[in-house]
Length: 184
Image (tube, rainbow, N blue to C red; front, side, top):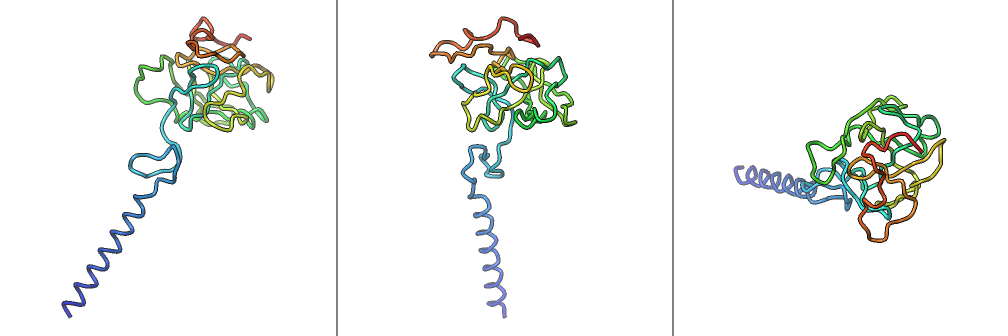
């Protein structure tokens, strides 16, 4: 009887080990998977990415962030159908701790849909549904949903150029003030 009990215990341990290995071995192939293999969905915070307009802020999935010229400090003017094309960046995407590569001030505000929305230098942030992959900035300089849209530099200023940079420093296309507020 003891032999049967030992065999059953060993079989149970082997099965549990295989289950553990299969759970840990899959990363889902996503660029957002963590080193521990826990989640295939992007997690983390806003970082810096490259676009044709230079280095800009991007969400955890690498999608370009935009500011809406019609917004005011801590207030979103993008409502209704605007939110369909310009999804708000969740407040939970705010970087935790400082980053030498980003001089912007991050915070949150209550978005038009009632959720927590990320702000950069006090202005609400969005992504654009026309950008289908990281590195794109198809919304740059567009006049949609009642105002102009600008990509956001790592220091929080709005990049107000509609001409792609040609390998030059991204600072050559940035606006002069770090707040780069609500003007057109």
